[in-house]
Image 1 (tube, rainbow, N blue to C red):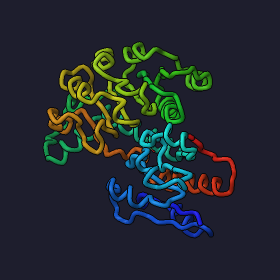
Image 2: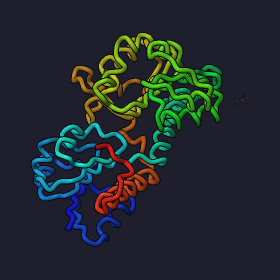
Image 3: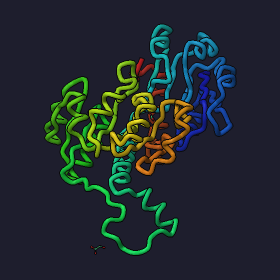
Image 4: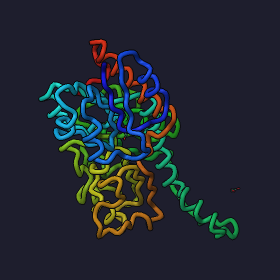
Length: 328
Ligand code: GLV
Ligand code: GLV
């Protein structure tokens, strides 16, 4: 009997399919909330496989609490910064994540929606209209900025960076520049994209969009110096991980007008919206900021596909086959 513990229900059919497999005993944390730490430590006991979410910190303590039989951690997410990968490797515990076209597309669409939202001031305009402030057509009302011919700076030209570039390049006639740890010739060819140093990219781009994983090297990738390097008319979009941006410095830059606006789906001390209590949730008062609650991959297509990938990897593992999405 393979015991699987699922830390929370998620949309789609994967959990049901998993439960119907012969030889599997699946238990799911039933409350629709992030599983409290104490509960997590209790419930993983005896599990062979943990199906975790990005909100669960899976570290040595959890692995100890599970016991020596723990063989696999399937993380229902693309990012896996919530898992102590080195510790898992040391214990020969397999780790997989769930990247898929559907979640890549969803995050790209969400980042683009934020770009349009900021450029066309959609949220502001909506609030204005609802507040019955519209008193007649005005050539200067809610002036935004067009996208055509603008330069998009993509930091991290992986799957999501590629997808956002394709959509903006094919559809909206933007110029693409990028920064990555390695050169990507296909990306350059497909979008006439130019590789830039981070500083140069920040200087040139009208929109900077972040698509890197959270690593030691990407922690506060965007901080004081970087925000100063950006154009005063530029927007920053973060749909990656909160700590990639130094949030306190971002708030300062927005207040000082060092940049024109930001679209944020992730936060440094998530689920808290601002990390530093002294910031007093000032982001909330800024009309040039769009805030979403880590929902960039929240399409029904993506959420189901992620589950199916977790399922596929679990079945591959229990059948001694190669893992399609092996991290460790
Ligand atoms: C979402 O943030 C994910 O990593 O899947
Ligand atoms: C705007 O509504 C226009 O007709 O130009």
